[in-house]
Length: 208
Image (tube, rainbow, N blue to C red; front, side, top):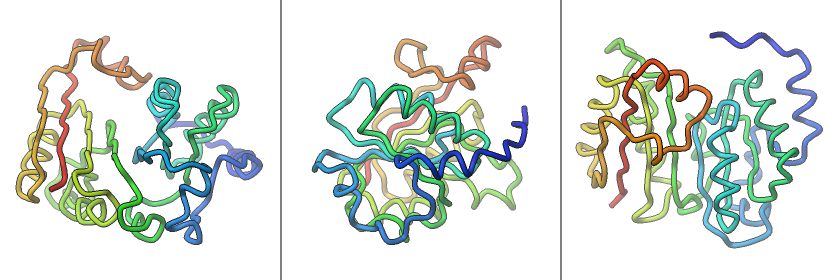
């Protein structure tokens, strides 16, 4: 369902000091933002923030960055960061295509891609967040042996992603074709598909 346009979303988020808009000058300085040297985990396409907020609550010794371009959804995530009083989460309004402009080499430890657009048409496959075009970007910002985790409800996209990882030289550590609910942080979106008995596909791969 398309989110209703929220005209005050951007002004509201700009008042939140945990939200950054296109911060190219912060490249290589994200540990200074968090004021610690804890690992930095990045979620690309964080939506309303359900996943990253829960992860941050469970892992106070890890820094989390939630990246999202849809401000109508992300303003909800920004409110949750404040409401939960989380100091280990920041939000980033930016494009995934610009990751290497925003993060330095080896600055990220872990990447999450949850329910990103599957782009089913062949001519659009290069837009997929697991495609080689994006893996090249991830490799430039993630540490050696860094991990990427992916969840999706789209089987063709999932199987193509596994091939992308293998062809790129990543080691696929896990590939689940029906992820048990107890092993997942179930977001609002995921809950919808589980209610329809639709399997959730999960992959975990390591950069080498």
